[in-house]
Length: 149
Image 1: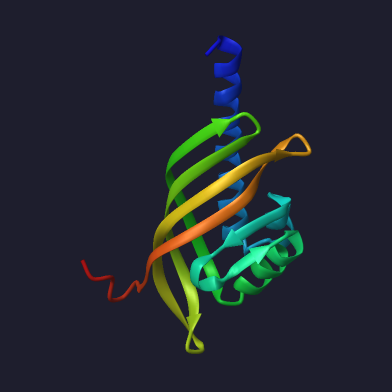
Image 2: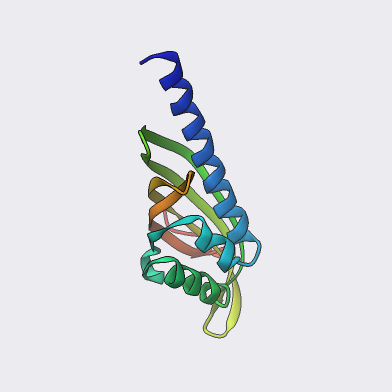
């Protein structure tokens, strides 16, 4: 791989890391639906596990507008990125840890959410965007009692 190709690959990886960082920032700022939907390709999708699969920017926007009524506080930490770039497409895997406040049975409850993101990315309109985000949740556990080992 020549120097130009290596630099292009590294730049793509950094742009994808920034994309994920903006995703987490918008989620942690009240799930800003317009901004979050704009991070996806026009035909993009998110599979949020127990929170459903949503395809297309309008459905993604509607999902994020609604989830803020269930997850009223969130602090997303997406770590351990494994990003593979192939031209104008890429894949990524991230470990997710979220400290959150959820509305459960009509009351606020502090919870931990842990899982994995499996993402695909594509360049659309000259920018890296999410083509597909798949969230596999390991657990959602109450902060007060924790989770079993």
